[in-house]
Image (tube, rainbow, N blue to C red; front, side, top):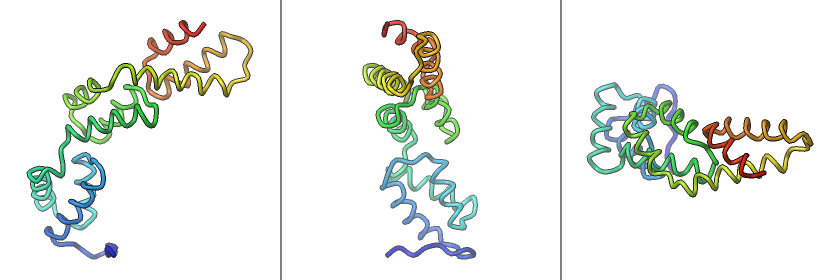
Amino acid sequence: MEEKLTPGKRLSPEQALVKAMKYCAYQERSQQEVRDKLYSFGLHRNEVENNIVQLIDKGYLKEERFAVAFANGKVRIKKWGVVKIRQALKEKQVSEPLIRLAIATIDSEEYLKALKSLVNKKSKQLSEKNIFKRKYKIAQYCIQHGFEAELVWDILKNEE
């Protein structure tokens, strides 16, 4: 059983590295998530950065792999659009070139399928009879999920 870190208890850099390896092996992580985790173990800045370098060298941490997995997972599972994915990756302090790369790897057919799924889901929930209000509500819902307004309206026009 893994021991819990109690307040005031500090892990050695070696102990923290082992925990960070397990943390990264469980699922893809951004460098900032791992950095925050290492700080929570009571490590100092130079120890944290040293552990980050070791995790990268050993293949446990790769920002590109994280960004691609994150973007594709959010489209497939959460039905997010690229606007929302871009914002979430920025919040995780992923660099702009990696964000562009991750978004470029999203399969366009799967992306449209996710958008259409969202349109159908919202359409079934609405009882609005006025076609213009109905489409507006569906569009707002999809745009809130991060889909581009122009694409959403194109899909809604084709649904007629």
